[in-house]
Image (cartoon, rainbow, N blue to C red; front, side, top):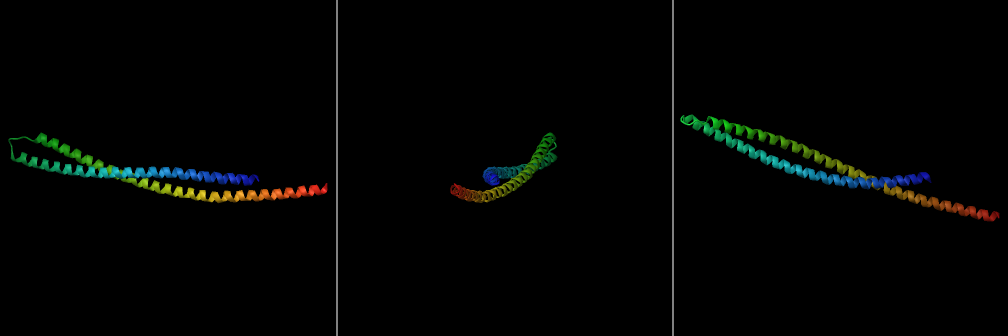
Length: 168
C-alpha cells in the first residue's frame, strides 16, 4: 500500500514536472526564436552598413587620388594638409568597415548559437512530453491497482465478517 502510494505520487510528480518543463521549454523556444530574428536583423543591418562604408571608402580614395593629381599639376596651390585629412578620413572609414565585418561575423555566430539552442529546447520539450505520456498511464494503472486491491480487501473483510458471524 505504501509503495503503491509512493509510486502514484511519483507518477503524478513526473507528470507535473513534464508539464512544467514543456511550458518552460516553450517559453525558452519562443525567446530563442526572438533572439535569432533579432540577430538576423542585426546581421542584415551590419552587412548593409559594411557595404555602404566600403562604397564611401572607395569614393574617398578616388577623391584623394584626383586631389593628388590636381596638386601635382598645380604648384601654386598647396593641398598637402587637406590630402592628409582626406587620407585619415578614408583610413577611419576603412577601419569602421573592418569593425563592421567583425560585428557581422559575431552576429552570425550568435545566430548559429540561438538556432542550436532552439533545437536543444525542442528536444527537451519532446522528452518532457514523452515523460508526461509515460506518467499518465502509470498513474492510471496504479489507480486501477488500488481499486482492485480495495475490492479484494473488502471481499476479504466480508468473508471474515461472515466467518465471525457463523462462529457466534
